[in-house]
Amino acid sequence: MDNCLKGIKYCLFACVLNCVSCIDGCYNCVQVIKTICDTGIKGYADITKNTQFLHEKVKAGLGL
Image (tube, rainbow, N blue to C red):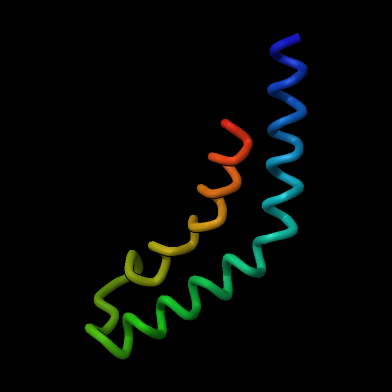
């Protein structure tokens, strides 16, 4: 039964991420613009460091 429940949680996780990915992208865009105006971009990591914001929130909310 635990495996079934975990599978359902991961399915829900994937569905929610699909729905909020555009919001996560917009959040990352705003953060990158703030970084460009403040200290500048130094590399690829500066552009991608905020792409996991909502991913981590959804993951924590589902207890995964």
